[in-house]
Image (cartoon, rainbow, N blue to C red; front, side, top):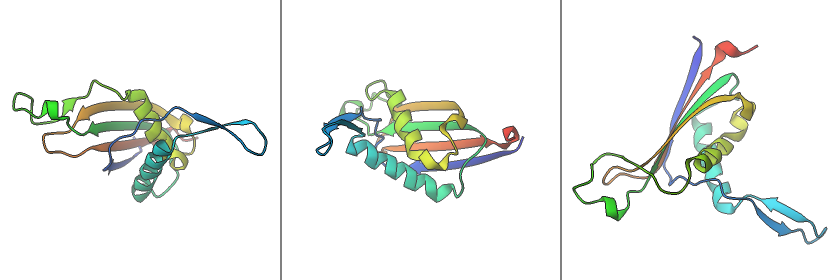
Length: 145
């Protein structure tokens, strides 16, 4: 099987895709939709980090693995909780985290449609660990025309 693998880590707190916001255009009095600044900033960070590791436009069947790791809350610091990463079962929703990461990859993918499989997980960091997102992109080049 002819595959390429790209792996990188985004050392930021993961940010979910924000709901579109609307404002009125001053010149035409029409409603304009826009992505919230916090989401745009995170997508830019994702793109910049991915661009360091991917030096071409990806084409072929793509599997994207994402592991979102959030800061460990104080309530999970006591010794009765495990030292390693712990499953994160609170907001934000994993689908919105996935959307912001894929949108950040943006122009590095020939087309969003080439993503045929997504694996996403979310956790709290290990005790003393930092928030981050681990990304692994596997490209199956055997499916190219």
